[in-house]
Image (cartoon, rainbow, N blue to C red):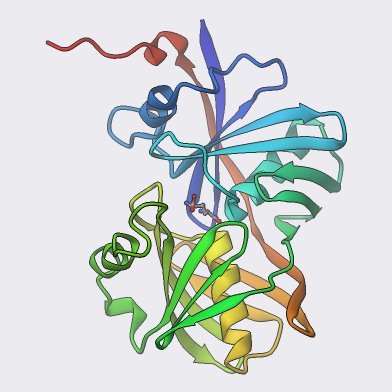
Length: 266
Ligand SMILES: N[C@@H](CCC[C@H](N)C(=O)O)C(=O)O
C-alpha cells in the first residue's frame, strides 16, 4: 500500500501534505514522518502536514516537524494547507480551520494566501532580545548584518541554552531595512537548522519591529521570498494579525507504507 503525497512550498518553507480525511496515515509513527522529511533518503521537507476532517471546521491541520514530532503552529504550513484544501475542493476562497493553537481564518486571492493569526498578549524582553509566542515560541534578536550571520551556530546557541534546551525555541535574526521593511532569517526548532522562511517567526519579528516603531503593514524579506504582516495594537494586546504571502504546489508522488516499519540493523 502507498500513501499519496503533495509537496508544497511557501516562501521556500517546504512541506509534504497528505489528505488524511480517510485516516490512512499512521499518525503516531514518528519514524515514518522523519523518513519522509529526510532530504537524502526521503521526499525531503521542513515538515509534514495532514489535512483532516473536523465536525466544526472546514478542515483540521495537523503539523509535524521534520524530526517526526508533532509541532505547534506553522504559519507557512498553514498557508500551504489552505492552498491544498482549495485544490482538493474542500474550500473555495475562504476557510475557517483548526490548527495546534486553535481557530484560524484564511482567504485565497490569486497566488496569495492571507492567514489570520491569534492575538499576542505578551512580549518578554531578555536583555536586548525578545521572546514571544505567535502559535509557536520565537526568540527575536535584532542584528546589523543578517546576511553575513552564522544563523546555524548562533541559533543553536540560543535554542540549546539553559532556559530553552528542554522545550526548544525557534530563533530569529532580524535586520531593519527601511521604515517598513525587515529581513529575517530563522533557525527552526524541530528542523534543527535554518529554513528559508518561517511564517510564525516572520510574524513574531514584525510584531517586535512594531514595538520598535515600524508601522503596519511590515514587509518582510526572507531567503525564500517576501511576506507581509499586518497588526493593530489594542491596549496590551496585539490584534488583527495577518500573514500574507504565496503558497504553491510543487509536485505529487507516493510513498510506500512499508517504510513505516523500523529499519533492520545490519
Ligand atoms: N516553519 C513554521 C514554524 C514551525 C514551528 C516550529 N518549527 C516549531 O515547532 O516550533 C512556520 O512557518 O511558522
